[in-house]
Length: 226
Image 1 (cartoon, rainbow, N blue to C red):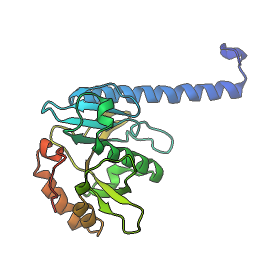
Image 2: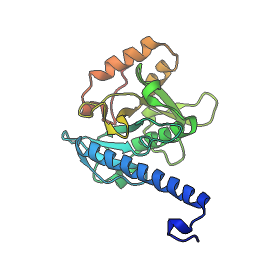
Image 3: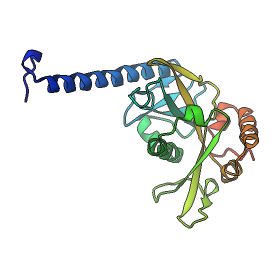
Image 4: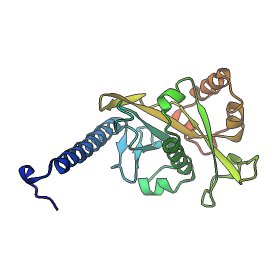
């Protein structure tokens, strides 16, 4: 263990320590700005396990991500965070994580990390459908599922890039505005329609969803817009 006094530290160690402390401070500052931003939107819980619960003035619960707005060498900008509204997100953040819609947000976080997706670009022209194979613990209702064409099991999906009434397009982050990207569970007819491709299809779905209020977007019985 090297001494705390910098004058007695090897140069390579002092440089490594400085970088570690600077990176840690960036994460602290980004989280503070997320705390401040969500506090202006609704009643927000502390961020834990990479997510938090925000209850809008309308009473709708929203689960949001935490971490995509931390600048680094590869992603130097203010980034984005994703959120999902659901009337099933109620009580506290921990119980909301066990509600079936959250599984879709959790799967999307993994997908975004693995593919290194910038949703501010990918969803700029309208909703994007992302599907995933439902795990054994996924308790999404049958009408939110479809058979996987290649036989891997049931498919579930989400729509990425869906604005929600009561939630701004973004809030101040490090180096600019952090974009807020709305996510909702997708009906099979919706993801099948969008996955056929075409900007006109994305525009049509966006127009239909824009007619819905926050409670309708957040409903576990929301009908397909297609």
